Amino acid sequence: MTTSPEYIARRVFRQQHKFSELFDMLDEVYDPEIPGVSLWDLGVLQDVSVDVAGRCKVTICPTYSGCPALNIMQEDIKACLDKYGHSDVDIEVSLSPAWTTDWISPRGRQLMIESGIAACEHIVVCPLCQSRGVRLLSQFGSTACKSLYKCENCFETFDYFKPL
Amino acid sequence: MDTPLLKYVLGLADDNMVLSQRLTEWCSNGPTLEEDIALTNVALDILGRARMFYQYASVLDEQKRSEDDFAMCRSEREYTNLLIHELPIGDFAFTMARQWFLDEFSQLYFSALSHSKDETLAGIAAKCIKESGYHLVRSRNWICVLAEGTEESRRRLLAAIDELWGYRHELFETTQAESLLSGVAVNRADLKDTWMTNINDLSARLNIELPDKDWFVTGGRRGEHSEHLGPMLAEMQYLARCFPGAKW
Image 1 (tube, each protein chain N blue to C red):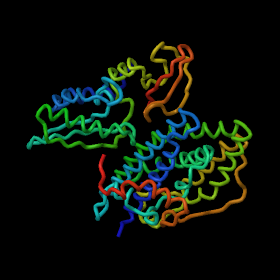
Image 2 (image 1 turned 135 degrees about the horizontal axis):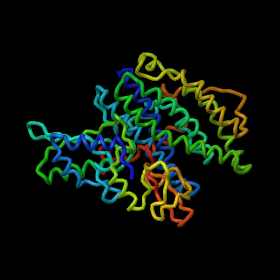
Image 3 (image 1 turned 90 degrees about the vertical axis):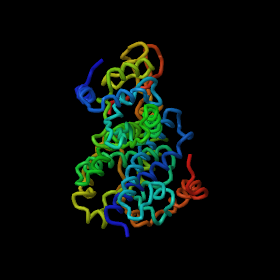
Image 4 (image 1 turned 45 degrees about the vertical axis):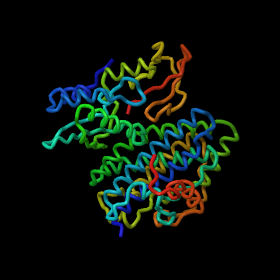
């Protein structure tokens, strides 16, 4: 599993962050469609802060511009922070710099593979039998961020999380 | 009175809103299940673009209209999309030929817009261009499949290109609002040669003879539309008009 330089930079940013405990709380917020992959793992969660009045600000970066999961993610962030006593939460959606699959954590990639999704490595490998003999069925799969492949070895169809 | 920047942003929003609505008409009607899903995913990306532009328009608007107000409460004469976006979906060849023309255009357009002096527009463009790359791979593939498929698929593709041909000019026409936004708006005329080269290259590879008779329709940015936009908006806006302020 490759660890991108972009992810290493994000990890350092988080570890040295003044409000790193907020990142830890938000590890409980998952992508609505990929079991166990947190918004941090996905590279959606960008920054957090709390002002003197106790107001939280969370910055997220949408994956694909039309992704319908974004609204659910915002609700889940608010519900999670509310549980920890932060009821006043402002969510900023940041478009720039644009989200990239390079921000996905190695853990996120591993969990995708375990869920039967080929992670966004540049070579497509069947997540079930690890064969490289795969064929593109459709440029877009179950969601805009994935395409649909078929394994020529085990004949299973699977989603491939596209590099972006 | 709308400022040139607001007019510019609304034009881009309307282009994407109308195209997205057209593509969603394929939902449950695609030729195969995979194509059905792919087309509706492309529609979703394009709806996302429309929303980003409408949200920015909302920030710029003195009347403080929301993105829903812009999309759901303006009539056809207030919509300023370019005409090519509003044409009915036709058959699958027509849909893919239009998509090919527009995906080739979007790649060039968003690449130029990502250098805009306006940071919000540059940010939206940088986001769109990555997704648009996948759309273009797909539409080019389909043009190859249709051109080299059966006699029937080739005939339909050529008919679609013929029908679309005169609508391409409007993509490269500078509006008054754009001419007032130097450094912010993309100079459309600059994109024309590259776009034409890209269309020519693939056509030549597939032995597609592009139409020799040229014609030109325009008016979308002034709110002068074909007869097709009104019925489309009536359907799209039905719920919002019947139940103002309805929420999920």
